[in-house]
Image 1 (spheres, rainbow, N blue to C red):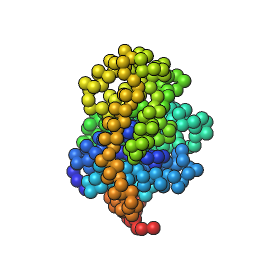
Image 2: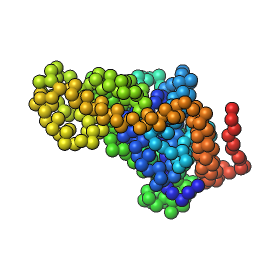
Image 3: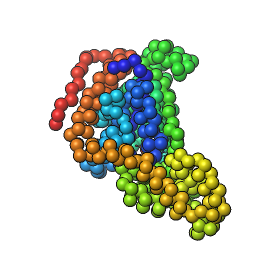
Image 4: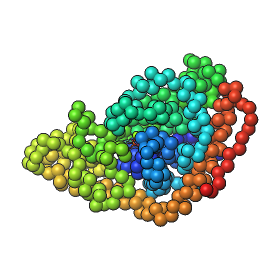
Amino acid sequence: MTNKARLISGDTPTGKLHLGHWVGSLENRVLLQKEYECFFFVANVQGFTTRMEEPQIVYQNALEIVTDYLACGIDPEIATIFIQSEVPAMAELAHFFSMLVPLPRLMRNPTIKDEIRNKGLSDNYSIGFLMYPVTQIADILTFRAEVVPVGEDQEPHMELTREVARRFNQLYCGVNSHTEDADYIKAGGLFPIPQTKLGRTKRLVGTGAPTAEGQLLKMSKSLNNAIFLSDPPDVIRQKIMAMFTDPNRLRATDPGKVENNPLWIFHDTFNPDKVWIEEAKDKYRKGQIGDVDCKKRLIEILIELLKPMQERRKLFEKDKHAVLTILRDGTERANQAAEETLRLAKKAMSQAYFKRDLRLTEL
Ligand code: ATP
Ligand code: MG
């Protein structure tokens, strides 16, 4: 254990990691892994909120995500990579925290509303689906993290996390309700009030068409609109060539719209050549450059960005045992940190009865 502040972030194993994860969160995780004590986890229990009928797929994707972490430069010697379901303290704290979250407050959460609509859950969502923001609160607070690198869609969950952290500290640790967020630990609280660290693109759009209301959907594993970090060059080529741009532009000589156009959102996000972008946008508006040329340029840039990740990925893809060992070692470390928080939380809540030891062994 170090004296560094803690950082946590995770991903649901509903698919492999994509470019939205990279710019929204992963890039920051890689950049910050030396500065903070980092915990990165695969949220396999949360995976069941929408994939409860496909448990093998959740298992496969969990290992794919760990492989993606290693591929994109997360160093398991520095950062702790773990699996949610083998850290029981998170589930136990989630249960206690659920008492501090009013249900109507949860139902006003805009991300929950978006997900119910965009993932086609209509009125069939489970109690477990509604619990997921609560388990997310526990994911963060169990590690007493101060920083959470996530995409913009997670901000409503972060706000809820801060509310629960304040409430717990006030109720069970005697912290005065007028305390500034930054001073909760000094004032005797158990949980720091965590801050969101947004990526350089807060919400990357997907490659698909907008909704009937004209809203471009975020790139998401579940929406079939993602470019995965592990997509080979020909798949990237095919996805970008088929990507949605300006629907009113039928020929390269038609004036094109740059705003709200995924092609240009992608260039702005990934193309380091800002001069080229400005010139090409100008030509695009005037009908002097084709979609195909701009897409070709983007394809080259994305292939180049992903190449080193894919080379590293190949080393781990062949060695499932190495991936599982990294996951087990990380989960062991995560349990040490988590059990300590749970013990302190139980003490604060006057529920300290016994001590316990947790140990993981091979199957
Ligand atoms: P699902 O479709 O199953 O919800 P997802 O693609 O939204 O999957 P998550 O596992 O829910 O991915 O999100 C993991 C992290 O990546 C979160 O911090 C989330 O904010 C971030 N993230 C996901 N998609 C994007 C995106 N398009 N742009 C920026 N950040 C993103
Ligand atoms: Mg999501």
